[in-house]
Amino acid sequence: MLKMATTKPLIAVVDDDRSVVKSLARMLRSAGYAVETFGSAREFLASLPAAAPQCLVLDVHMPEMSGFDLQERLAAQDSCVPVIFMTAHDTPQTRERAHHAGSFGLLLKPFANETLLRAIREAVRCQPPDPADGADHASS
Image (cartoon, rainbow, N blue to C red; front, side):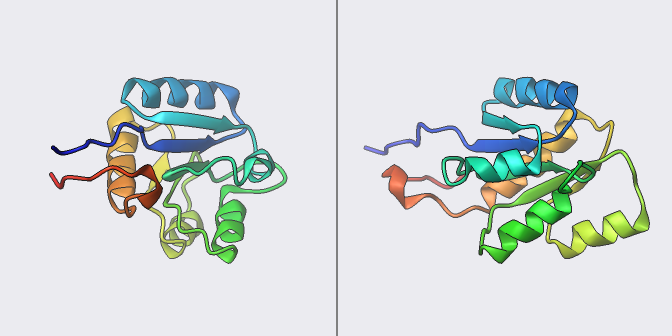
């Protein structure tokens, strides 16, 4: 008998705009994801290692530490959590930096929910199964 994984993928949303965090959390939960939200990069870092997300959705422009700075810090710690950046300020430099960071997307605010969901599905699909969950995974 095939056992199906019962845990929902955990998505961490980091943005200093409470309304963005609240609306994204609501939408992601309704799409079947577990969600943790953080109002700053420092707040997210303070939660480690308790938070073990399968994907990070990071605002590029935040006070104190940008989404890019957070991603660089995580990469320096050998974190391989996929990242999706979001910004309201599209510049060639932002696009280039997101590309070089190996992100699964740079979404321009406002963006369609389906655009974010598509990027998250791709990011989560690229994650290796967690051997700790003890479930057999069937490929689709």
